[in-house]
Length: 166
Image 1: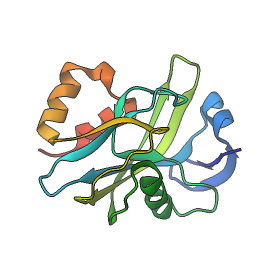
Image 2: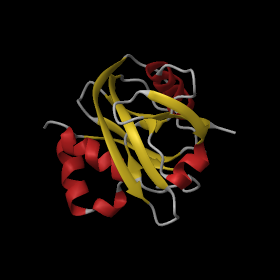
Image 3: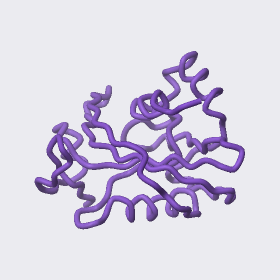
Image 4: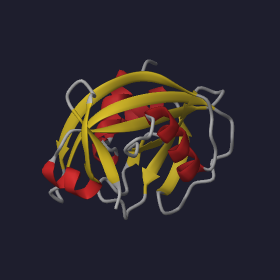
């Protein structure tokens, strides 16, 4: 049973809860999103596996997940990057934001999202249970495609992409 960290609007920990229950009840919880760029300033994005509990088959940032109770958020980000793409790299905090989104399947994402940025030229080795496809894209072409095809992108990733420069 996976648990997530429940937080208040200022990201102060207020408890823990089973992940699926948290998403059914729409409770605010901590998460992280990772943006990994290569030396050509292209962003590694992934198409989420179709079997994900929400947003399956949609394009999203390099990697995202939840820290486990008692786990530091940045350490969790490194762990998850290795689990999803088979590499690790230096990560720096970029910004935080909170969002709430109700999905068609009745689940709600209500997250305090810690966004990290990293750079690597490592070859991604995606975990097929998590990642259906991946590609490197320029921010300019990404923003253009999100504008033209917003339905192809995960909700939180559209928020993140809107905050990126270039």
